[in-house]
Image 1 (tube, helix red, strand yellow):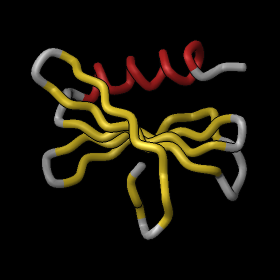
Image 2: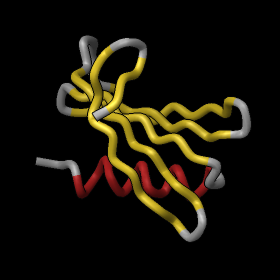
Image 3: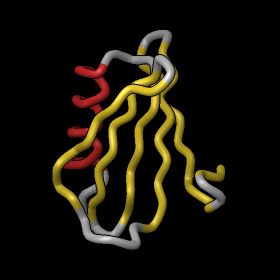
Length: 81
């Protein structure tokens, strides 16, 4: 459990070699987006998508290609109904 913008969120931690990848998940108050968004902030890559009424954010210093690969895997398989 963690807080993002003052709201409680689920926090899940993954590792890829020497990189820590944080995933934050919370209820989506808007519409789902099948497309992933990506951005970089202060040396970290961020990948976001929403699915089945939930928001998902990945944050890590891992390269963007591998971040997108993980996002695609999580979105399509591990988190599907």
